[in-house]
Amino acid sequence: MIGKLKGVVDSFGEDFVILDVQGVGYVVHCSARTLQRMPKAGEPADLSIETHVREDMIRLYGFRSDAEREWFRLLQTVQGVGSKVALGLLSVLEPPQLASAIALGDKTAIARAPGVGPRLAARLVAELKDKAPSFVPLDPALVALAGAVENRSAPQPVADAISALVNLGYAQLQASAAIAAALRSAGEGAETKVLIRLGLKELAQ
Image (cartoon, rainbow, N blue to C red; front, side, top):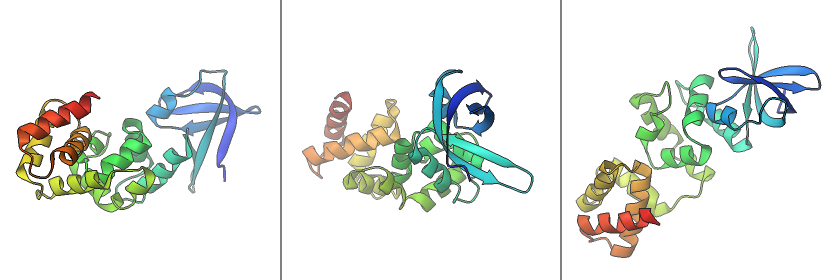
């Protein structure tokens, strides 16, 4: 099994790069994000490799980091997620962003990936939520807040403040993190307008 390739970039395809390793050209399928960050043709490059072997083919998938490869593997443990959808998710979200989105239940961010609808996004969150925090350090208060918002058990001022920031164009994850920080400084009984003001101040830093 191939775990890593180091060579020279030969050329690019729509979803793959051909890596020349001592005269042998390996076709390596990658996420759009990985392809964008690859060196130009003729320059040296190395990729972590995941090898899929089937009866009718051998396919190589390449990653710029071991973390990206680990997420590629983990995502495919969820029913309905194959290699194409997993690469799509990693094209839209970097591993830390993906871990945060899953841990905080941000299904909207996850559903931005091609081939991921609301139902699959919900399944990804449900099945991987307990595993995601190990991939990225997250404030426990933020995770608890996101869970409360998801379950509609958050205090109304908190839910309204997060909703207001989202309506202003901030991502759900950014809004939740800002209001979690605002809650720490303003206290549990803070009014919506106070949380919004403090949240915007947090986002401006």
